Image (cartoon, rainbow, N blue to C red; front, side):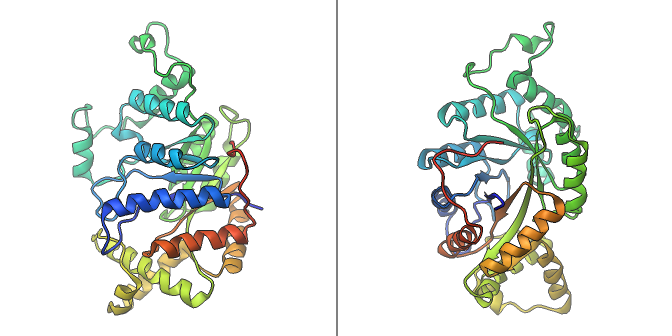
Length: 341
């Protein structure tokens, strides 16, 4: 059966604190470890009242301390915000603490708005320049590829020096990340849950252009959104909060994830309902068997090696239950060691 993983955004929910959102992420990771999910990734977002985690490397360390086998990583580190040397150091530290379990997912976007992006980068040079390729080259060099002998960075020893950089995976919502991942010979994760670009085009292009590098063969991850419950009616009720949240974001309001009761009390016009219907093309809602079949069909059509699920459910217990139902439907079983790329 197809491997399943989780991308958790540490959603802040209405009526709860940011601290509770972070603790819920750690609790969900424990469940994922026990249920047999392959990976558990956390993201980097800034200046978003709806997302509590701007520092994935801190969360990865906390999650690693309470799990045993599941791979843990970033989905992703937004490289424009960080010095490559610092990323290499931090993820080597994580690899030293949790050997063989760390993934380094890398994104090209800043993960925030232009003002916050400027605040993050204003001491790092020209904030208007697209220096992602240069930063990525530096990260790979610090990871072990090395710099030319006459390069000033060749004298830098990245600590801990006897620990490898974890596997790099490119993230993307277009074909850019897939083409770059193919060129570098690394894994690729496509963000179907918010992308407007066609998933099949991005993932099939990645597979067709792949050249062996860090990996001998391509590894394509399809990240998508799913909400599962024992009955379709309950799944639809839980998803109503995600529908309202998506509608509010489209209007420029990035507040906490609303309760289904808030969604039920909302007044929707025809344009709102049309937006929700369109957005549902990227959100899988239903019972375990129905979602398993739909996810398998999509994964097969885009030739994904793995599906990574994210779930915007207000109630934490219901969110855990959603993932557990899908784990059971896919026949997941926890093993003694983490999966490898």
